Length: 255
Image (cartoon, rainbow, N blue to C red):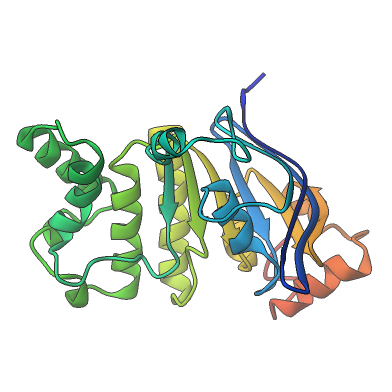
């Protein structure tokens, strides 16, 4: 039985009068890709920000890699963040740095005793892994949106994280590039054996990358399972409405 790396129970989060998460329960297993699906503004990004310690929950249990996020110390949070990789929606690259310098930055910042030789080795390895070795001396502005997404993933995996959080990895990309990013997510899982949460509203991304899918609607998970189990012919109305919201024909995604 695979080890549980994330456990969330009865999680609530509000902002003023706006109730965003209303009693969320979630588990993530070791080396599993879990897709959290939901419309924009339903709390998906809030959820992964709580998991990464960027914001705190109002109530409920959040345990990440054995750490209780409600009682975690500042020192332990710094340590935990070395084990959790966050792939931002906009890639969050530093415009004034080359691609190589962008990837080296977390190594230099977090691992102050690492040698220059090891930095070069790790940087070259992840650039090779995302198929962009030739961009090492280029600037972010010279890359396409899909290439920047790949570099964002490279900068995450250079730290060998145990848990990767992907925030809308295919947002703003053309269909062909979306497929390439989805394939890269699967390759990262295979190569690094990391557990991943993939936040998206993209059904193709969910079907292609997810071992399991959890549908977040109205502040709680309405259904969990494989893609086919969530979007089967007996799915309740609100699940079917989300499917229709994506403007995809039933024939496009065979379930």
